[in-house]
Image (cartoon, rainbow, N blue to C red):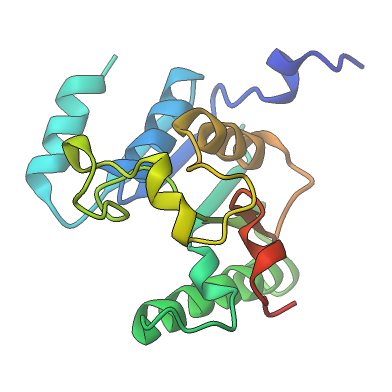
Length: 188
């Protein structure tokens, strides 16, 4: 058995559906998977962004669903975004319930996991202070982030690839948050 990273993280021949795949972390996930041999489908609310992403980046399977939630669905602190936090908590719960139900009641060869990102540079997390609508490390000071910086696209892509190719992980919510949940109470 080889433990080479190229074999451990091989997503070649896998099929992926990335929701929100036209921008931000969704686009990063789609590119990471496609760049490593997966057949990727993307969906989202803005058709023009999806068309742009496809135009710009077009170059016997087990299936994997990777939901993108948020650490906001795991914290007990409201952050004054009640509906958003509740929707992400629901997505986390749905991930775990579907992983169980589809395997044990339907016997489908489908793994379902979620990534709960913390602060990453994107349009959504921009405070309007930084260039090109991106969050910068200066913005992190007020976010209780022990890492002291925002996450990188590279770090996010590594987790996407891990969940896409590791066939033993299912029903998990993986926080990629620079240690945020160690500083803020979580529902654990």
